[in-house]
Image (cartoon, rainbow, N blue to C red; front, top):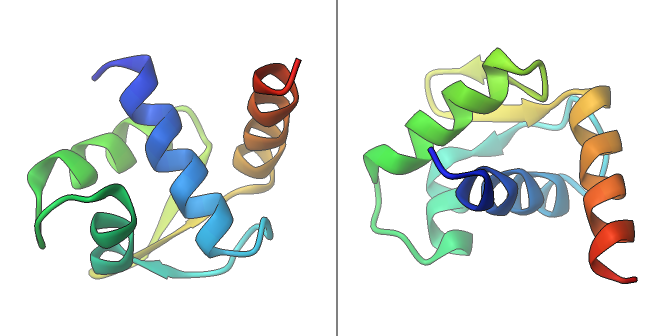
Length: 83
């Protein structure tokens, strides 16, 4: 997984969740936000990689949420991008 792809997925998840940890977001909504087809395997693989870093967690078979660490990372990435 490229770091860029992971950051895009984390950004989409955080924004769809209103930048709040623990808010479930459907994978289908992530795919739509990312411009991917429904059930695009890359989204699930990206989420699994982010979960291994403790940045997201699976809520159920169809949704994921950002962890507090994921929201913090998203904020750091946004701050860096805006410099």
